[in-house]
Length: 222
Image 1: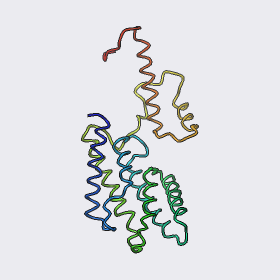
Image 2: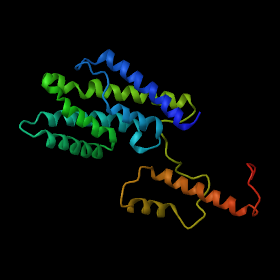
Image 3: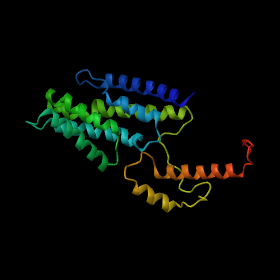
């Protein structure tokens, strides 16, 4: 099974179960699942190693952002375009502070603002971030954990080992990689230990290639 097919089938199960559970429990205007779950499913099943796809990011990021969206929708007299922008702005800040940055969280905040669940009553507005948003997020994450394990993969992702199987042989040290990672002008969607392991494996591959006689293909034993 290819990685893309495995991710697609996982998303099928994740979204279906999240919808069914939401339909059973949630009673907000007949909404069983919110649209941002589709984007969360892409991250959880297609790129599970991303720091943006952790269970913490999915559950806390979506829930917290929905809370922000509901809160912004309660501010009176604010034009809708500014309200929409403010909800996403504050959601990004909240997720960053709580280390739960999750791109679909921005959509969760925007959804909560546009739906304005508090218009159905303050109690309904306060419940919306939990039912259906948090419930959807928990269900999707649970399916992702079970599905990845059933297909022989690990989720939540565990970054590369603290001690690498083979020490770096080139000019790069662990401190060099850490310094370079922090000096990147833009945030990288990768764990620092995963990046270190990638460099380690690349050095192993380069060493094996250089040790192979020219024109002679490498075998598994090599």
